[in-house]
Length: 224
Image 1: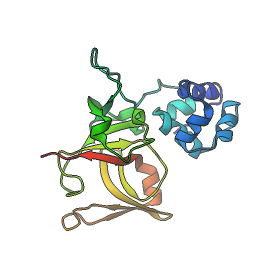
Image 2: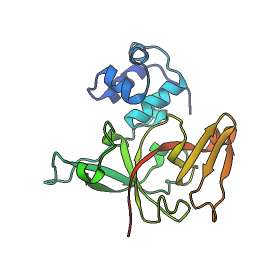
Image 3: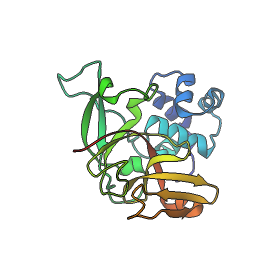
Image 4: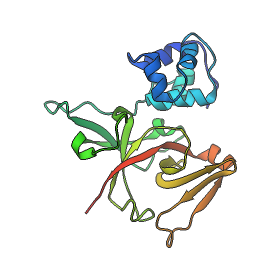
């Protein structure tokens, strides 16, 4: 990623708030409200805060930092004409195969369609989840059987707060859904189908060069 261009940076940050209060957006991004207020007044952000703001708003980190390209959004698509309903959520689904070229997930993700879900279908336990910052992947293969089976649809919440759990991540060409365990030395990638797929370890320097967290798996629909 290129360096931050401070001309217009605060304005770009303000634009991704999309009418939200600084306090509300800071909570969504997982940063202090005072930190966001300082950035809006022109303070230089840390890399961690830059990533958090980009992830929470669904824009490219490169665009947020430099303004050199349009801000590609990863957000829920508007309901088709005549299909709007207050209890229905329209969430985009993306191909696990990234578009060729360089860039982050937000720049290379390929939308395939949009899935409509109701709060009743989603069930309990997702209170406070920002569905406008979610996406779907269709599970491919049997590496995560029987937690996630081939053909299942997994709901991914875009976030970057590293903690052990079930994540979607990019390896530069594909998006994979795996259990991740984080340490200072690197990331342990665990397949639930352990007899067929042993775990692998990605050193921290290698992860930083070629991998990117897309988001945490929060819900899945089983394919029969």
